[in-house]
Structures are given as structure tokens and as C-alpha cells.
Length: 108
View (cartoon, rainbow, N blue to C red):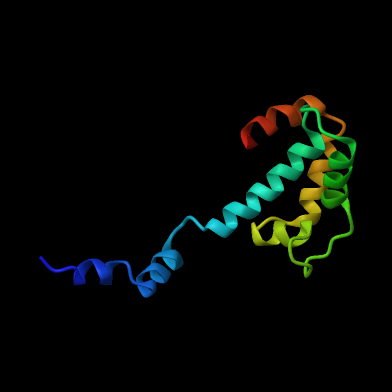
């Protein structure tokens, strides 16, 4: 039995091919988790320190800077979301706290 098949199967070139065609992108999952955490921190009922809530809200509702890596707008665009529309949707939740709590349960 030869190990050459195992070596070829796990070569870096094959891994890149797999990642290019995979529907799951780890980087995208990370960005989605960053956005979800900010939304939970900004609107969640869990006890958070004020500076965490304030920081999350500043990140979510601050000036849109789509070219600045890891800014709200940059993250939204990399998740195929429209930053301004997402900000407006999140602002609407401020007047409907029950609705946001129901939707936050999907992020946890």
C-alpha cells in the first residue's frame, strides 16, 4: 500500500481547489460572527458593560467607511449586504425591542 495517494489528496493545491469551490467560506463565517456579536451587544438583553454597548452601537451606526477593513460597511459588503439599508433596519429595531429580541435568538 502506497502513501503517495494520501499525499496527493491533501496537497496545498487540492486544498485551494476545495476552498475555491466550497459553499462554506471560513472568512465569511468569521465576518458574520463579528456582525452578529455587535448586534447582540448593541441590542441584547444580556448584561453588558455600558462601554461595550456604546462601542457596538458606534460601530453599527457610525460613518460608513467601506474601504476601511473590518469597519461595519466593509463587513456588510463582504457579506453581500447593503450597509445603509442594514443600518436603517437596525435603527427600526430600536423602536421595536420585542421584535429584535426574537430575531436575536437566531444569532445565538
